Amino acid sequence: MYPFQHGGHITKDLYGGVPMGGEAAAPTLSFSAVTTGAETLTLQRITPTGGTCTVTWGDGSADTVIANGNTVTTTHDYAGAGTWAVTISNPELITYLDLRDSKISVSVGSFAQINRTLDTLRLENITGTFDSSDFAG
Image (cartoon, rainbow, N blue to C red; front, side, top):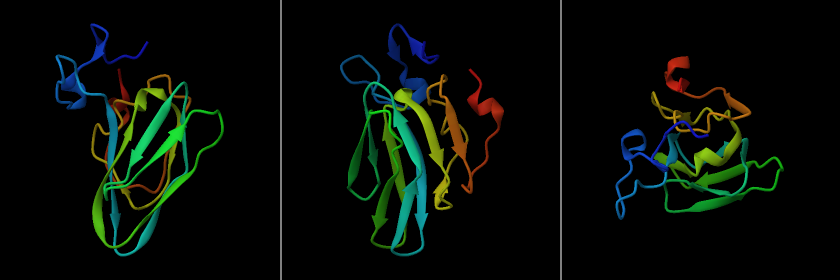
């Protein structure tokens, strides 16, 4: 069971969603990518189970990651310098997440909405501050 459910719906208070038709908006995993010029961001592995996740890169483009049991590495080329708001839809479907690109910056609580039955979470070389309490549930 996903730990952030209330009455069968994920609450807007935990995810910052805007209610639509009386229900909370779908959750997303959010973090920033900081580039100093034309650079490529690499998300080493995203594995959704039983559905799809969409990676929105913050510059108007997006890619879909389809659940197929395979290792999915996705990359995106940014045209120039900037701080890009990257989001991944349906984080509750993710069973394996591997983020190692030094361009990634996270804030406390960014990963709190990831599936608590996540098999593997690897965060390496990223910028941010959080501790085990950010993952407690």
